[in-house]
Length: 526
Image 1: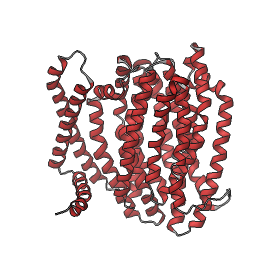
Image 2: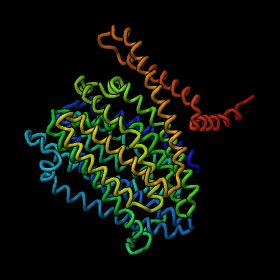
Image 3: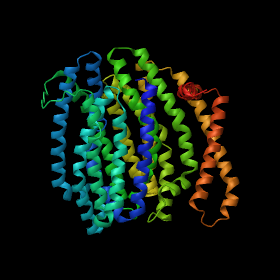
Image 4: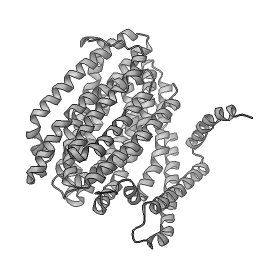
């Protein structure tokens, strides 16, 4: 499957996943609002999420896919499956053990490390502990799902793996809507566990179709398994360091006014909407291709694939960041301000969202740049740079939180992320023989087009705000109309500016669209 086609599949399913992710957050927010109850749920999610992030997310995926793909590329499928079985069995034991230990340690960890600010409210503290323990089953199921996705992606099968998050969000929504009247916030936690299980189950049919050769073996001495463990080690340390930032943010926000954790979490989820749709989709789709080229020593093709990924990501994320900055208030209003999620929660969220938006391009670039290192089986360099970024983030957290409160936590994240992306690009330039001048010129054109887009949207809002301001509390349809029109004007200006500046990515987009429409036109009856 080509990178373009794989990216299209990933983007399509991830759009659906992100839409349902927004709906999930909106439903939960409308049900519980910016309250201490929802703060407790968000804090309780940290330990289960840390287990998954530390043992699975990125670490095994980034280490496992290059090794598994390398064996497939050399037509050693039987050995590839022996590696997969060994890794899966070892992973399952690790996840069960880690979840059991955290279940016992939750009463100690929550009040001392996760949310010491909750100590002033014993009921909120106990609720956080109970929810933490309930959700400790989720990393086990999500670990199985993640490794299954890695196997399927190595075969360049992306559909069921990309669909799994859609199902996950849908299950949580259903539990929130139908079980909350009986179970309260515990219904959402139960939905997280069931959703994680279903994420794995929906991928099994496609995996079975691949003539699965799974066995109960756990051959940790196999060279391929040892390669996975060796490559996963530095990345695991890096992800452990990333968890430090989440813990520090939660720790500091727990002592801020009620709803601060809600604002921080919801603003970050808004950031993840475009990040997941564009950069993660393109990076995940291109990763097996990079691994294949790296395993065969085809440096030139690998360079071209990396540069294409960078250009496409910047083409999509730079204007998106401008939209997020200019239209942040109506976006938060339209997406989240329902039910118990009132004006105070909206204002807090949109302020944090502004500072997170500044780092969107950095987050996006890290996705593709880090995978270029992983494809070449180098996890040490990204680890070192991640540790630098984490250290900077924590220092900025401590310095900015007393001044900007929860907004300072978002700004610290954006600054450190941009620094990490810059360092990754600089060090990759000589190794992958990137054409830095061409990337620089292309990026400068995209920045100019995006800034013109921002000016156009801001001017449109200033002009249209006069009649809209006559409405004391404009309805959602009216606000949606103004927001869509502003985005449409900005998008048109961006396209025109890209055309005038001869941005090559615009021509590539049009070529893909024409290629998609041509078969339909040919099949149409005369």
